[in-house]
Length: 248
Image 1 (cartoon, rainbow, N blue to C red):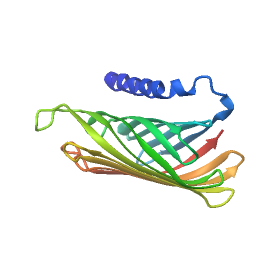
Image 2: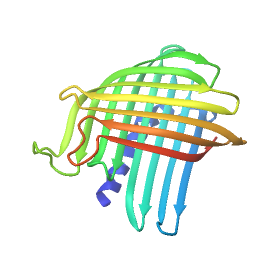
Image 3: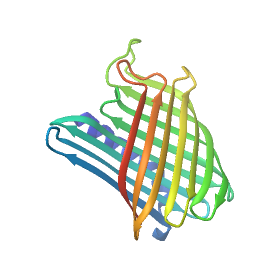
Image 4: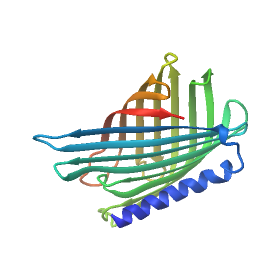
């Protein structure tokens, strides 16, 4: 556990260093965020606790847009931990104009039940906001190159304790305001290894609706697929969540 906590601290520190140089000296009024929490506790024949949390931040000025996303997930059934995951991702975009931008992105994930001690990547490339309607509806597509370093829990059949390779990243984000009180979100991404073609793809589909004031209800479905998962682990993970979201 100590090594995992140390790894998580390293991931958060790296994420902070990517964003901090661009955020310093900017007006705090340019920050927006949302905090999300979902908890389920059952008792009786099965005692189960499921909790997931998320903090999302966005900072945007004329030339720069910075985003950060911190997530955690925990599940315990009959005194046995069945899921424990921590994720951090940050991205800074330099906007050439209203549509085109250059991005630099860093990501870190520590999933206790994935076969990895941790997963990390850094990528940079070109993005384009192909469509925008108002402040809440838009479509972004991006493509870039980078590097992936994933440390394995155990040495693999080739005698390696880590996956290290150059990658290509392709991503899309679509948000659409169904009404003043409802928002649809879709995120897609894939990172493809340039050496062995090992790909890691993710999809997140979410629908949120305002409850009162800044408080919303959010339902989401997330899929993560690794074409070459560590031995003994599934290639595909899915997650369905229902949570409360507070915007600020």
